[in-house]
Length: 263
Length: 267
Image 1: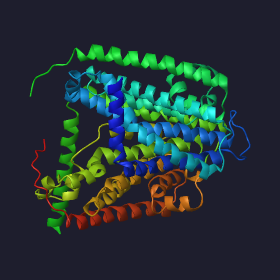
Image 2 (image 1 turned 90 degrees about the vertical axis):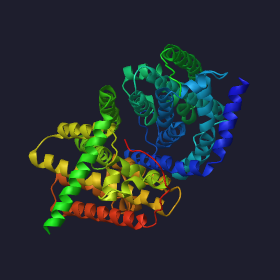
Image 3 (image 1 turned 135 degrees about the vertical axis):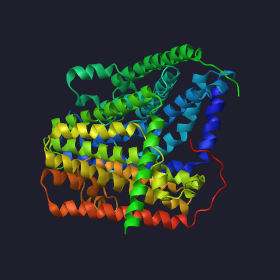
Image 4 (image 1 turned 180 degrees about the vertical axis):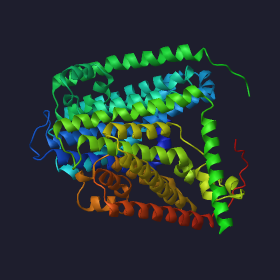
C-alpha cells in the first residue's frame, strides 16, 4: 500500500508544478456552469418554484457538484492513455515492476486529479456563490460525508475507465466505448438528478453506476439525509468491489495476449 | 488570369488529395474506422435525452421548439464534423508550430496553411457529420432547407476552423497559446448546443461578435426556419472575413517562425 501512496504523492508534487494550467483549465468548467445556470434560470420562472422536487438553488448547486466531479476526472485523456499503453506495448514496462498495473494506474490518476479536485472545488464553490449568493443548509458532518462520497465516486470512475481502457487488449481502440459510457453518466446523472426521469428508469438508475459516481455526492450536498448517506456509501462500497474485480478480470485475460518482440 | 485560375485549381486538387490520403490512412483498420463513426453517432444521440427531459418541463426553451432544437443540435454536430474531418490539423496547429513540425510543409511548393491543416483527419468526426444530417431529416426535409443546411454546415465549419487557426497561430508569438485556443474552441462548441434565447445582455452581444456562435449556428437556424436574405448574407460575409483574417494572422506569424531542424518522416 505504501508504494501506491508514494506514487500518489509523486504525482501530486508533479502537478503542483503546473498549477497555472489547472487554474486556466477551470475556464472550461466555468463556461459549462455559466450555460447551465442561464438554462435553469430560464426554466425556473420563479426561483422558489419546485421542479421534480428541486428549487433553483438546489438544482444549480447539484450541477456545480456534478460538474466538479466530471471536470476533475479528465476521463477521456486517462482512458486514451490506458488504451495507448496497451496498443503501443508500453504496458510491458509496468508488468515486470513490483506493483500491479491496475493499482499503479489508479494511483497515478488519483495523484493527477488531487490538485485539480482541490482547485476546482474552491473555485467551483466561489462560482456557485457568485451565481446564487448562498449555500444549501449543511452541517460539518454532512460536508465531510459529501467529501468522502465524492472521493469514492472519483475512485470508482477511475476503475471503470481503467476497465474500458483495458478492453484495448481485445479491440484496437476502446475509446468509443468510453464516449458512450461518459455520455450516459453525463446525461443521466450529471446534468439532471435522477428524479427527472420516469419511475421505472429511476429505479434502474438507483442500481446503476450513475447513482454512485455522480448523483450520490451531489444529492447529499443539496438535500442531506442520513438514510440517503448510508445507502450511497453502501452502494459505493459494492461498486468499488465490482469495478476492481472487473478490471482484474479483463487485465488477467488480456495480459496473456501480449507478445513481446524486443526492441 | 488563366494562370491564377489554374493555380487555384491545382491547389484545390492537392488539398483534396491530402485529405484523401489522411482518410485512407485512418481506414486501414476497418473495424476501428466503423466503430469510431458508429459510436460517435450513438454518443451524440445520448444528448437528445437531455432535451427530451427539458422539453417535458417546458414546450419552448429560449424561443426554440423541440424540432428546432434538434436542428440546432444537428447543425452544431455537422459543423464540428465538417471542420474536424477536413481540417483536423487546424485544431493542433499550436503543437505543429511549437515542435517545429511546420518545416515539412514549408518546403512544399503549395499553400502552407492549406497543406498543413488538411494533412490530418479525425475519423470520429464523420460520425458527427452523419449525425447532423440524421437530425436534419428528423426535423423535416425540403429541397431549399436541405441545400441551406449543407451550405451552413460548410460556412460554420469554415468559421470554426478559421477561429482555431487564428488562436493557434498565436503560438508564433506566445508560449502556451494552445490553452487559449482550447478555451476558444470550447466556447464555440459549448455555446453552439444551447438556444440563444436563454442568454441575455452582454453574453448575447458576445455570441454575435467576439464568439461568433450566433453567426455560425443561431443565424442559420433562423434562416432555415424563416428565410431572411440579410441574415443569409451576413453569414457569408462573416465567414469570408474570418477566413481572410485567419490567412492574414497565420502568414504574419509565419514570418516569425524559425525552424528547429526537426528530422521526421511523414508517412
